[in-house]
Length: 76
Image 1: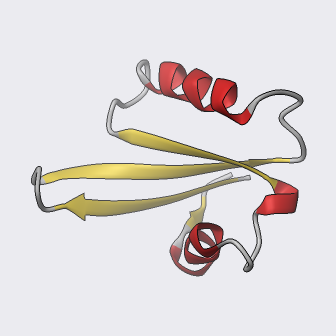
Image 2 (image 1 turned 135 degrees about the vertical axis):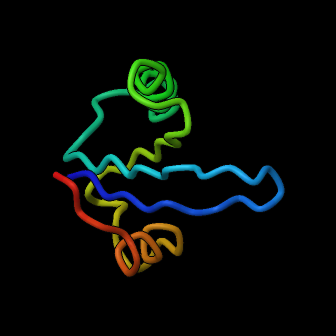
């Protein structure tokens, strides 16, 4: 599942696109996945900020995930 939100960072007057990548299991270190997503975004859009989550961690008990669930848009 992918969820997205766009937020304006007034300090830089630039729009960043937050993407939550929610998967059943990473099968590895979440930081390795994060850096892989950063690398992949270079060929798509540099303003994308990836946020990887496993399904078990993507729920209302996680404040960041809760905000994404509440305000994000499902894109796939």
